[in-house]
Length: 127
Image (cartoon, rainbow, N blue to C red; front, side, top):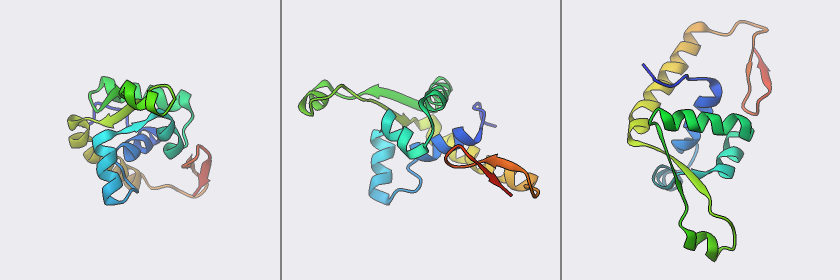
């Protein structure tokens, strides 16, 4: 179904962009405004060399939009502009379905003892 390869890292990025794990108010803000690169990196614990290629693939598939912060905001805070990423309407429709499919596929496969899988911070978890 998805036009995006649903690796564990891609799933982690989509969860962050969907505001999963945030309270209702913060989740609404994440969906509306998105997250900037450093904030996404901190939330996902993915290195930039992993995170930004995933964001670009999601953008090319139409699941993610990116935009620059307004100059006035950055200048007012005395820093460079930030590039924000947010889930698009297509991504908002397809990502939850793709994430559910990926979870179902992982559950159907099952993980036998001693099989390593990626951990949340890039390590491995033994099952």
